Length: 540
Image (cartoon, rainbow, N blue to C red; front, side, top):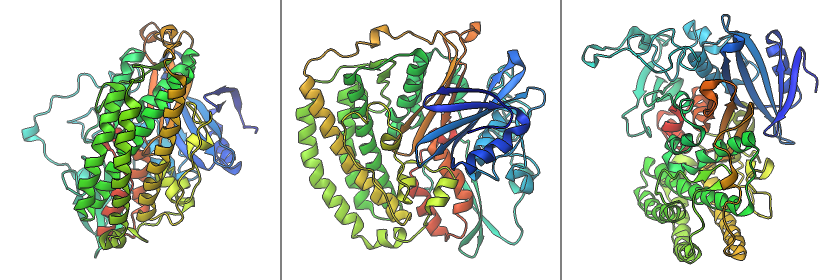
């Protein structure tokens, strides 16, 4: 595929990277879409002050053959502006918001201009009393998150910005961030006509910690424990993409035993996360029995993860080249006893959940999302598959040894409603049990083989400059981590130059601006819970 104004082309992370001249940014993105790259997965930036440039990267997939292209360009640091890609890829809207507030890049034609006359901040406060107006924290010379204004909270009041852009003919109701219908501190300003939502403004950033900036202040391996905090429900799911990207930059290979232990930890984590999802959705539609049962059964899988990794919630388990601990000797015996009991509980959970009339009323036929809509807005993981899209990165774009003799099937929905999103997770739990059974069989056959042959030889940091994108099809979707190494800079020799987290929850929540319209108020709350959110990774 040819690009207009192409300056450079290279391969990284199974991705074709193409750098083009800034004036051809939009035209080349349109060519990508015409060639079938319909799935927008990430848009972010990297600051290069020595070149007086800021590099913008846009990553898109072509689902039919699992090809990926990263379109890049570099804009002048003193004139940071590009055309918005939202007319082509609506799913990058909040990616552009985030890139604006972190790097100050203006995206001309962004949807926010039509309503607010500017690009709004979604993670940082727009109130200069709380965050400096012209501070773009991921520019290398900005000062980051240091020396922020000291806030006298007793004298801080709301600003008129809270009322900007609202429609006078609608009644606005604010749900969250303390409202029991929202999991974690996130809010929604809902514009209602009667009980029908006609306008929806998500509000997040309440737990924004600036973790990408924090990662850039840490040595490479010291980032790993912090990744667990991005989503405590599926902490392993964030270690995997970062370590995979780091291994590519270091040119480090992992032996088969290390791969198996990683897969084992990932699937155990997927099961306990899905159980919490099922219980939380049931609780939010007033089915409390299912919630109690899932909390009980989830606990045994957390115990197994603790036995495997040494920790119960934030695991710090993966390392470049392998994992931190060897396989426990009596793990298989404990696992088989746990699973024999769990399978009986699980069948009763399915029966009592799907036979419950409240679940049927709040889930079946509610909040349907078509395959085209899910792809357009960049959905991934179980939510995408529930809309009928057969895209599971473990199968379609395999990594970490999933394609080495491990057999399982992807769970695919047909309607794309709340019920399908639950059914897909029920089936994924069954498939994860199938994967774990195969992994344990292979580990048992390998016996006492030494773990981590490559672990001792893994360097503490990359020796060469480079870019890598690690991904993992986690319990919530595509967890992606972009890592940029720039060892030529003295301050970045042992630290990542840039780390960007691609959060599926961030993407799914953004899409509610559009997919939530037309829903009844009570149905919207069930729709939001059906997406399986984890606010910490969204706010970063």
